[in-house]
Image (cartoon, one colour):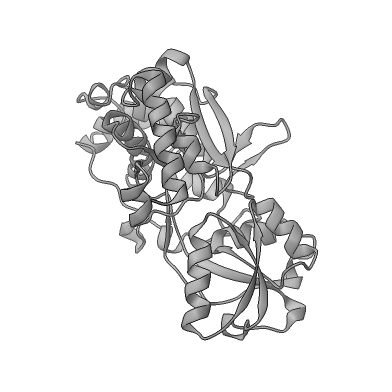
Length: 339
């Protein structure tokens, strides 16, 4: 049994002993009056604090969507910054109710840690960033390089596999947070910084001299990123899962924060009417108010609105939708039907 699995098992036993079970998270969240959401320690666009110290970004928006669904109030969220090392124990121990940070869905995490991925909110892949002055144009020219790498992440394993497959060596420079990685990379303590390509774009956007750094063309892994909950609490998993699905469905059907009231009043599309609580009892099935879907879209926005607000092509991060476009536009973003 791995050290992490031992820690997670011990944490889970503590939760069961203290609370009787971890299978009533929705009731617990309603009773305490807020959602405790784990986020990253900070990735521009994806998870950050604004000038007032409030958490914002692509990932906290999922937390805010869950709060809107439960309370009709996006402010009913408290945030716990987590690192690659602390994120899973924070969730397993009950310190947080859900985890919404850049975390890759893998078989081992799904089957061996007692946690459940509820969907994918960003399809990513691991890349490399280097100073332009290094004169490197391909990852296959990095033999012997020193590499800043976040510990406790899938990127560690991907990095080792990639260099082994290409008969190259490297010197790892282990770090724990994205901020620590940026600091070490800019200080020249490593030749290369590797993480998810979206994270590299976000980090580079915050540099003083963006043009002095290039992201190499190779993408060496699949990184489907998504929120997690504890295993064994299906009603809670359904609430978080269908919050994300509601945001995706709303974009698919053209429902936005700007037109949702008009859609409630005038749409005759059955899927939209069920999503917004005009007909059917979807909210009751989830243990929520009939307006759960309406509140998410009105207060947070649909998937596309959130994407463009925080990380889209008109933001400093500048990411195109690519494979994160809706399936009908050639991407992988897809929700099961609301029925």
